[in-house]
Length: 308
Image (cartoon, rainbow, N blue to C red):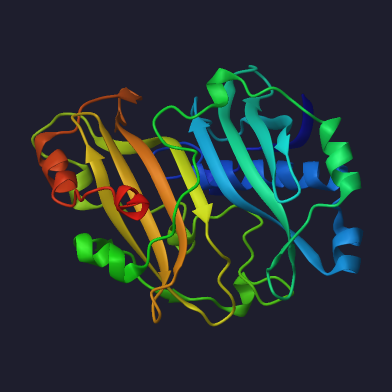
């Protein structure tokens, strides 16, 4: 596999769990995939001339080893499959000093008209180049706890009818978040629900249970983010979270993002998290009070409702 990007973990990329934040993994891997797209013929000059953009619309990630400040990283990979409407890139992030696998990624990306965001066919020469950049999809990069099948969008009204959510603060897309065509810049594979959340956040009171000796937080082991469409300048965005599953050691989050005024769906983010002992740096069980708080927001999986 060819290496498409190299970097080092910077201090600002470390979160409150003491390691590189999952959104930084996404950003570094997305840059590698855009470099892959450029190597296939979808580089800056061609996109500018064709008034088109490459967009990563579907991201599946498995996390393997936490990366600490200063760690030298590389991202290598290639094309897993390619068609006229979409190319799937397989990427894996590794520590360049130790060789340890940090994370694996499946990036589904396509070509879109810059001004309208209508899908455009991927040119034959790009598909030909993709065939020569083909790589196998190893088992450690395939989904384990989250689906990779297509997701049916669900309106906010339909989602709300099933039950209440924990709601993120709403926000409006501003010019500084947009590309030159007036759409939100998602080139770093950002999760819409977490787009305004800082890397380092103040711990919520329920994360630390006074009845247990060690501090327990939630570490993401697998994630999936599906964009149904890209929001544009001035669009009001609201994101709401439900817990689709809670066990003694794990929790599945669903982050649904909508247009706050119309209820039209924008994206779905899924996270499979484990209880993580911050002192022992290993998996644990949720303290009773923390598990109760998580279970209180457990709702049916509305992806099942959408399929009915």
